[in-house]
Amino acid sequence: MAHSSQHHDPSGAAHHGHYIIPIKVLGTVFGVLVFLTVITVITSRIDLGAMNVPLALAIAITKALLVVAFFMALKYDNAVNTLVFSVGAVFVLVFLAFTLADTAFRGSLGIMDAETVADQQRAEEALRARDPGAALVAAATDTTAADPAIPVDGSAVFATYMCNTCHTLDGAASAGPTLQGIGSRQTREEVIQSIREPDAIIVEGFAPGVMAATVNAFGFANVTDAEFEALVDFLMEQN
Image (cartoon, rainbow, N blue to C red; front, top):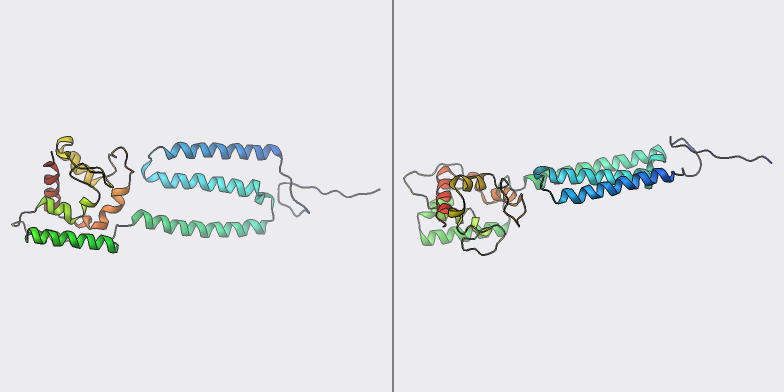
């Protein structure tokens, strides 16, 4: 009695039925997924700076492709399905790229939300009430140079650029490390570096990248040299 048999191969040729993936292949893919998961856990505990997000995404995308290609058998499916999946993946990558670009450079244009604007206005009003001359410091958030004849108050700069929203001077807990006694704990060069390069030294218990991502939202990108020096002087006085 004659009978017909169907042959399957991994080339994706037109065959009836589904290609049966060998257990050895599935086991190998599973091992790779476990290995990548271990790598994900290890790298999550290491600060790699700007490479944190790209590396995590690369591992996640690799794992997703392995699952789709082998466990969902897209590798052995019709080429049309592979094309549809690829087009969808490209669109996801494009949208993801725009999202990452937004989060990476958010604050670079000095855009502030309503709450931040209100806080800054209250700080400026308090400065005017305490010292009319300090209003000139609060208003100096543009590219114009400050009048060298007018002394700059470091505490006013500290309030104007909203440093006090994340840092306290009395040791109280806040979003950022306290600056109490910073003048006796760090040299002037270290204080300058911590402002210019906030991720150079990360205080234990605080996440990297936070200050770098938010500092310009308060207009600090426009700080003048006189303001910067006055701010450093003020911080060095915190003994």
